Image 1 (cartoon, rainbow, N blue to C red):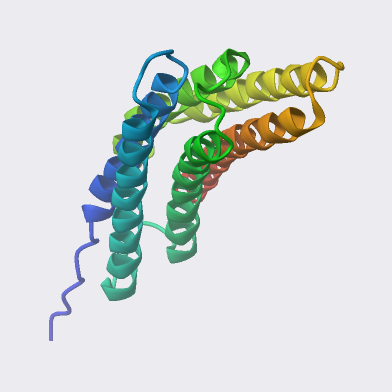
Image 2 (cartoon, rainbow, N blue to C red):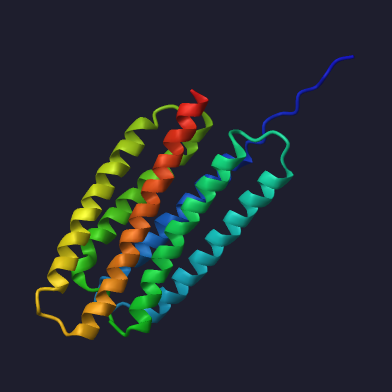
Length: 205
């Protein structure tokens, strides 16, 4: 009797690429928050919709894992990668939401370096996702993400130091600190994405 091996489900690669593209949109919306005169209410609505679409993609990944016999790599790694990608979007949406709730108006220009890191890192992540199919040429990706995360850390420390230099009222310090923390968490989550991809690549090599 001949045994048939079920083919590996490959739609995960497309779903991860789709998820990463949601992040690119989220980072671009954050960048728009830096521009004076833009409709912040409209940007907030677009960000909420982008976050909703990212959640839907995450749920599709989880449902696919639960219904697939042969996955392209370990199920635990798929869960972890999906969760880290979703965390990035959640923190970016949180940033925009806090700017509105705290009535900060525009995203303070001091935060531009963090947003630039997010834009660069999300685009690199989206560009790298299709390479999960072969697990080739990914080392430059996680090395660059690590470099960007370090750059983001330096920007975060400068922002926090500036907040506590006595130029701002206590309430303003608290508001701005919450916003820069959310941006920092988003950058850290992107590093978690890169670390997970590195671990997957090592296992599959």
